[in-house]
Amino acid sequence: MPQSLLSVLFAVLIVFGCPALPVLAAELEALHGVTFVEDDVNDGDSFKVMAHGRELHLRLYYVDCLETTYDAKADQERILEQQGYFGLDEPHAVVRFGRQATEYVQQVLSRPFTVHTSYARALGRSASGRVYAFVETHDGHYLSHLLVEQGLARIYGKTRPSPDGLPSDQVLTELGDLKDRAMLNRDGIWAETNPDILADKRKFQREEKRRRKEFRDDLRKKDAPSTTNPIDLNHASQKQLESIDGIGPVRARKIIAGRPWGSVDELLKVSGIGKKTLEKIAPYLTVGG
Image 1 (cartoon, helix red, strand yellow):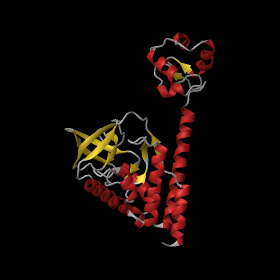
Image 2 (cartoon, helix red, strand yellow):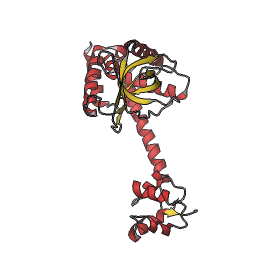
Image 3 (cartoon, rainbow, N blue to C red):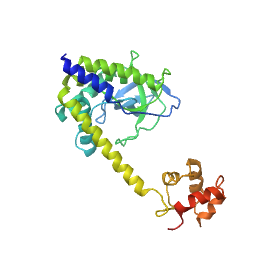
Image 4 (cartoon, rainbow, N blue to C red):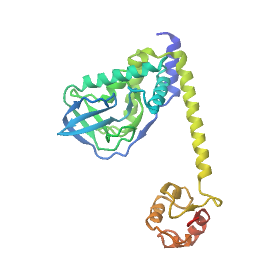
């Protein structure tokens, strides 16, 4: 492998992190003898299965496979993002590798396997009610690890401790080691990584992310409750109430539960809100304003 390519790949490993978000660790249920269900909605990280007579639509923890469709605007945006992440010359390569991952999963899960899930809802564009899960193949391998090892997925998405009790940070370390090896061996998607565009595309994506954050922060700042822009006690959302210094999640829930309010002074009826607290938060609140 050319030294320049190695340098770029190592730099990417150091500089570019993987956005993985923790999920509350409710107890996992092990479902044995699960079978794969062929369906047009299936892809590499999201697919339907039959477990004990019940059909489930699973979404894998920790990994994100490439898109397989491109008609929706959201699909197109994710394709461009994934193209930049892997440094691919053509966006169609994203779709091709996405379909390759789908075929790989169907092949690996051709024999009965085990699913570990707490039925945590996986929000997204699917309308079929997906749930997050770990999938353990018939020979004892986690599907998420196999996908990263084969170079067919990136480490991205929701995390939680593994079924065998491994903390999330250690799972991420394991997956990171597998990703490093796949990158350096040019396995799967990494075989078509163009080092000349990889860094530039990722830099552009980081700049776009920064600009979107600044845009959001500016809107939130101007929309935040203030003495000149108080919020209505009877219509404010939980998040709006919590944005006022002195109103936390518990007080916000009590305020919502106590509706309707005739005046801001009536908040003295709320347990935990005394005269000092009311004096502090009152300028940011109104009733019927």
